[in-house]
Image (cartoon, rainbow, N blue to C red):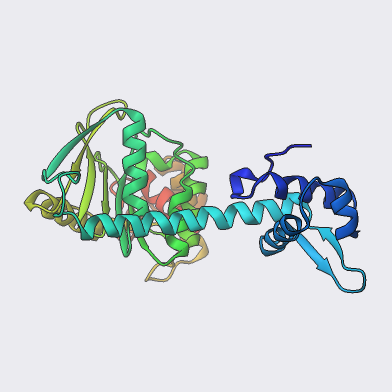
Amino acid sequence: MSDDLLEPLGLGTLESILYQRVLASPRSTSARLAESVDAAPGALRAALHRLIAAGLVTRLTGSPTRYTAAPPEIAVDALATQRRNDLDRLRVRVRELALAHADLGPSVSSELVELVEGQDALRHRAEQLQLGAQHEVLAIDCPPYFDSPTDNPIEFQLLARGVECRVLYDAPGLVDSARTEFVMRCVEAGEQARSLPSVRMKMLVADRRCAMIPLSFEATESTAALWVRPSPLLTALVTCFDLLWDRATPLAATRPTGELDDRDRELLALLAAGAKDSAIARSLGLTPRTMTRRIAQLMTELNAQTRFQAGLQAAKRGWL
């Protein structure tokens, strides 16, 4: 029996022991629990009350009063999730407090640009930047990554509490199927996603009041970044994002504005597969001139610079 089982959830030794006793002996009375736990009656009642409030133990109707325990894999997981959400809200409030008192002490840096070095420091600052967002997060996404490119639980928390997330992806980075699947899960959760054929830079902006950019866009791994506070540089970064966003292609499962028939779908599928013009023309029974004209029209509508990109964009948009 573990005396500190529930300690990570903010509950003490007595609660941990009691929960495991009730779990092992369902429908136990308080008298029976008192016999098996060395605790004063008042402390026992208080511990049971805390377990009930946490949803780990339930008081059954009838006389004498009996108690039963919720399944640990369900109750503890739900409690842990609630605690993470509480900590998330606490981080937001603390950040708001720090920003409100930014001019009251020397502990808050007044530098417009700060150098952040080391993977742990970068990860911490990126998390801090996202968790502190109240309205909007803007991001330009491309390798290298210092965390998993297919996992960002913080973004799902932000979307759940109504923070708008707009992410601009470097298209070559979406060729990997696992990466594309993750991006589409983000889109389904509410992320606004777009891509460009080539956008070799990274950026993370929160509420247009602070940002992180790598010290070098050419580096093969993330080892240093600039933390940018309100300044002309921050304004330039946000303006750059907005201009790139206007040029980018949405990744949502939208439909083309023009009519898309079965032949167009087959044409786009062949483009995505990398088929040659002669093979496409034979397969669809088109003249080379007609095929070239229709491909050009579809590429314009998809904002694609190559035929292969047109096929990929059509697949990502759900046109195929």
